[in-house]
Length: 392
Image (cartoon, rainbow, N blue to C red; front, side):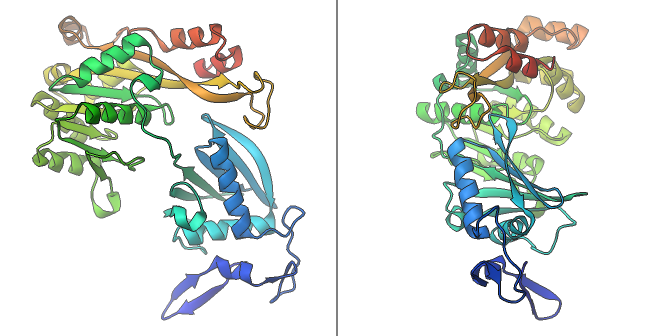
């Protein structure tokens, strides 16, 4: 039940907090309806705060709440995989959904259109702000809460990369110009790698670093960070173009989404800037192929590109239960992840080959399959996770 009141002409203010303050002995005074909260009389305020605290403690990246008719299913994304944890009774679910929307400054009565918002950490008692996304489905509304974990920015050594790949990354960061492209699906560790690169650049000092991110997930001292705001017209393309006038030596582009941004990144890399960006593709070969489509000047693309890295994250066997399932791993048998990596260092010989024959058949240093098999055979993960990673 969401209490609303009219303000002025056609304007509504929703205040889900009112619904909880009107509870007396498990009843809503206006209707006398009994409140059932999975066997308790826990308020929506308390339940939401407890749910998010438990998710943070488990190390979840997202909380999924989906109305299924008669209640809501709650899932946590743990180590990249959704794990069902509980269900909410219908009346409690409705009030929790309303509370989330209220805290995120969204329209609580709107459930037929998507909405996006943000909850301040002070309002929810969380370690960091929480990003909120709502979406209508045929069984009811779906809400996803993105949790930003309070972790310090990792160093290159702490990424867990193979020594050869870590060395290739440091060689690139010492350059005065060139383009590094990171690829991989969402949640594959690309952002973690970028922040490790930023930490290395800050530690070694002396260069003006500017980032364009969506969103800024961690604030790094001594660099200039910008957050995309498409509603206000600040896109990756526009920000990247104008930031070149801010005299950067290093430019970080959170994602290359269009031809204009791709061409800006290539042009910047060719004119004495170190550029780090992500580009969605399925492989190192796919990155080169897509970039060649986005930038018609093949010579410019091949000259600018210095290093391509393709990442995945493979779940570790839980150290507490050795894969049997326990409370710390929420019964999944896994806790934590290890990076899988394939990479492609551009050489003059390789550039000439691509110029003659195209990107087809490019072979990276160590494939993802080889990396995954090594992790499995070392006992860090298991065959089931290997098969999941490889899609077999």
